[in-house]
Length: 71
Image 1 (cartoon, rainbow, N blue to C red):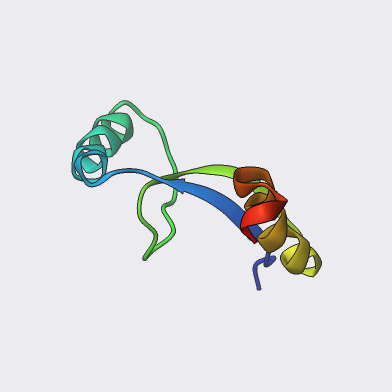
Image 2 (cartoon, rainbow, N blue to C red):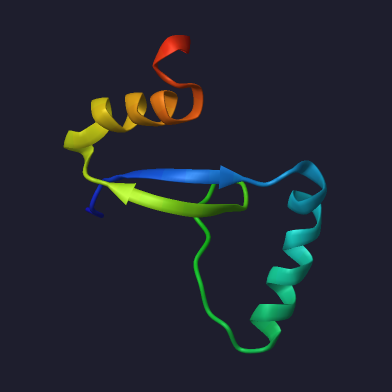
């Protein structure tokens, strides 16, 4: 079984989602090899974390984006 972990992902806008399959095809024809995770939109993986850090990971971005006053 594959290792499980948390990933912080930046999703792309709809126009980019429509354009990227074409780019992926060009890269494949050029010899690049990769595997896309089924069911996930195209994205940029920003960071990954162990499952044990889920509580900390969920709260930390809220504080950094909003400041402590908006929680």
